[in-house]
Length: 158
Image (cartoon, rainbow, N blue to C red; front, side, top):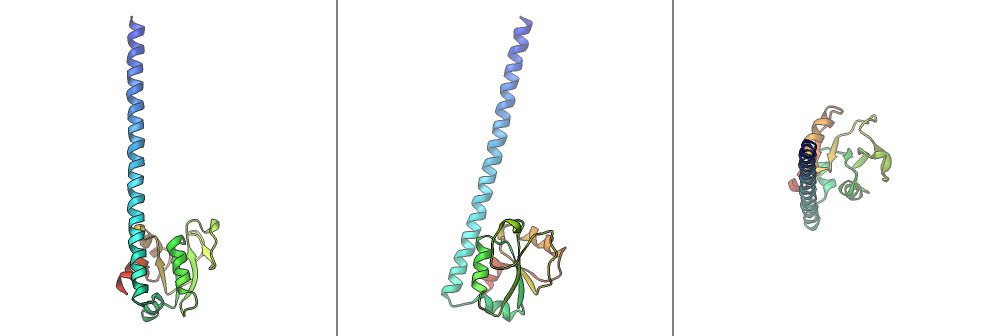
């Protein structure tokens, strides 16, 4: 009788622990899903603003030139980073390099550096990873002394 009681208590406790672990994992998965959804919405809204800027005939290169940024670096070489490189191709703005955590696994027409590499001096760094701008700006400002600009902010200022 005592063994059966201990076995039943162990089974119930094991079941409760299993349910708790599953709920924690579900909660983490939902949180990750929410974060990704918010990130993609922010990216969509920025890209929509970029299209609007283009439709109004405004140019990022003109904005950068007017602010004295002739030699820049781009942080974040995913979709927005590649679009920025394409947008500035053939202008008087020189992109010295792109910075990305995964620089060694990416292909780009510009030089790519990782966070651990040495960086050349530039007039400004444009950050395309807009949802993490504050953290990125803080990290970059400890590595290099130049203005660190959010692509999103530029697009809304133009």
